[in-house]
Every structure is written in structure tokens, then in C-alpha cells.
Image 1: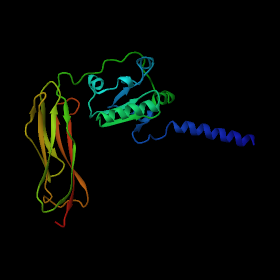
Image 2: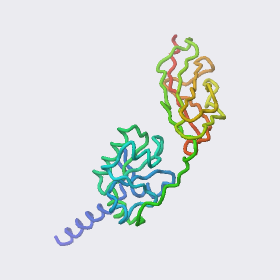
Image 3: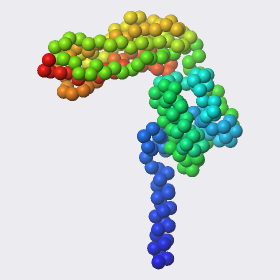
Image 4: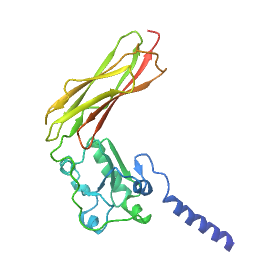
Amino acid sequence: MKNVLIAVILLVLLGCTQSSKHAARPGEITPEQLSKQQIVTIIDVRSAEQFIDGHIAGAITIPLEQLSLASLDKAGIRKTETIVVYGQSPTKSDAAQNILLSFGYEDVVSLSGGFAHWVEDENPIERGAQAERPDTTRGAPAIELNATTHDFGLIPLSGGIVTTSFLITNKGTKDLTLTSLSTSCGCTSGKLDKERVAPGESALLTASFDPNYHKEPLGRFSRTVFIETNDPVQQELTFTIWVEIDTTR
């Protein structure tokens, strides 16, 4: 009986050890995965005192109660950045994630288990106040997009070329240049109404698809338009169109 009890205890302990390495749920990233990430924005939503006591290297401190569009904008965080948020607990991490998603931030995940899990897995921490974030956007163009995808749905093979438009706005302080427009397939084309966009102004990208250009795949598929820019954060824009061709019409 004693041996059985010891075996059960060992199994429980083993399970606890393995659970710290479990795969993240949808919308989460594990400490192990985060430790291997290089290009990511990390937001610490704990208190300023907790941040000073210890935080993930490179994290930006914005306490949860101060999380707003204004505070995010002041920190220079774009809506298209890949963002990881964490509080001390999973509850606070999830709350911060939901706030950012409600603000329209596109790629936001929470740290599985919160900062406590990061420490439990013996990952390194930094202490002290936040170092100034490298500002690669000051005195630079800054892109804001009204959309990056469009679904044409089911279109007739004989219906001719279909088009859609995307708006590219320069929210920065210097001129935005849009160059080297290309597409993933000859059936798709793109046209800009301007290649230089002054601060506060916008450019219109018209993306077109020709269902009769050549034989296409059956079912729903995508094609992509690429544009190079001088925005230090978004150096290449991608616009995706989805389409399905009705070959009976």
C-alpha cells in the first residue's frame, strides 16, 4: 500500500511538472514559446511597483487600470504589431487581451499562466524601471489600414474582372512612400493612386482579379498583393483577396 501511495504522489508531481510545458490555449502563448520570440511587443499590465520588482526583459509597463487607446498610442504601439500581454495571473492577462482586442488591435495573445508562470518556469527577469523604448517611429511615416483582406465570394467565370479597394493612411510625421507593387499571381493586379503620401493623407490601392486569366483551383482560394514601404515598422504591406469561381456561369 505504501509503494502504491508513493507511486501516486510521483505521478501527481510529474503531472505538475509537465503541465508547466503544456501547449497554450487558443489566444495564449506559453512562457517557453515567448522566450524564443524575438520580434514581439510585450505589455506588462501589473502595477508600477510590481514591474520595478521584476518583469520580462523589454516589456512595456501600462497598468491594467490605465490601459486605454491614449496610453497605447503614447507608448507608440501600433494596431498591427504582434503583442503579448501579461498580468500577475491568467485572469489579469486575459482581461488585458480582451481590452486590446476591443480597441481593434489585431494580433494579441496573453501569457499562459501570467507572470507567475514565467517565474515558475525559471525564466530570466529584469528589475527596475522601464528602459526607454527604442523609438523607430519618431519623425517617420506610420501606416494605418482600413482593411487587409477582402472576400469576393462566389463569382461567375464569365463575369469579367472584379475589383476592390484598400485605404492606406499615413499617421506619421514624414512622407510615406509606397513602391515595388507586386502580386502572387498574374491573375491579380494592383494599382495605387499615388506612391507618396503626406502625413495625414491617404492612398487608394485598387486590387483586381481576372477569373478568366488562366485555370484556377476549385473551391475558395486566395491571392495576394505586396507593397514595399518606408515605414520602419511595416516595411512590406500584404493585401489578401479571397475568391471562388463558379465555372457554370
